[in-house]
Image 1 (cartoon, rainbow, N blue to C red):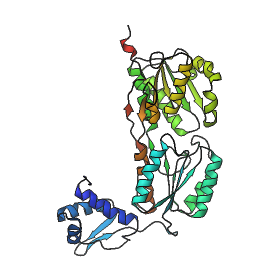
Image 2 (image 1 turned 180 degrees about the horizontal axis):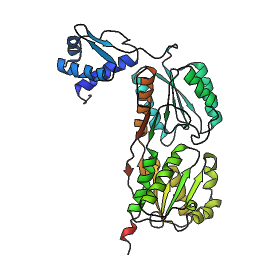
Image 3 (image 1 turned 135 degrees about the vertical axis):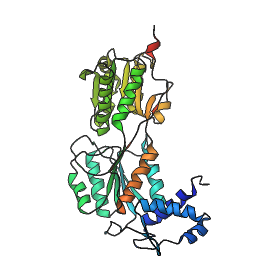
Length: 363
């Protein structure tokens, strides 16, 4: 049973029919009396629901006549009810949650998802964009591939603009492209993770960040600014950058000595995500080091990996399903010609577990 206020249920019902084309521009809405009888609510509840949609510029009241749908669909191409969804990965880590959020919204509004995976390779992105543009879709939901680097597929994104096919980025964006996006506030996330270690008395910190995705740059920026704001030492040698293709080699047992030497005397480590943190904990295990007694770790995503080991990871939460659903809703509004806030960043929340040792209590 839906526990939301009745006016929200009704406004969502009307909005859904506007978005899916059941109610078209200029069409008269059923009367207050008809909606009241259909939904078993008061006319005041109906007025409240309609008022919400009038404020959203989806409806317009006409004195003495009724309430009318007040927009024209932006799409002049044939409507396919298909949405292209392109992510870097699919069936592991945070991605099932993102896909679930997208699918829930698209299904609710009568759209179908065409899913493609790039494995964070720009050549795969090129193939997927080309084939989906050729097949015909109403819009794109895209997690950028290597978003921190110049993108070799610019011409395909330009074609989207020329053909008036809307797109929304998820998790990151290409700085040179003016598309709306839904992401975590990765700068604030980096600060929050770093401040957790500082709060617990760690002053010598090390950071591991991904250089080919823009999220890594923002998390690094938050890391640096938190150190400076709290008067802690920042040195370039205390940051390790990696790219997607380096991951397996970086944590190969033959590289353990190098990693420990790079970390040196730093007692606290900020890891780009939970996957990196778990790999690093395995390095420490092989070398007889303990988390959190020898090294404290904070990471990002609060994924299922954060609870797999004997020591739970303190991690910045990633609301995967929410990000997927918000991106899908934003795209549907773009498809239907509604104004949107182009940039959507979600404030971070830290989930604290056992991977951080409180050095302030040390004698």
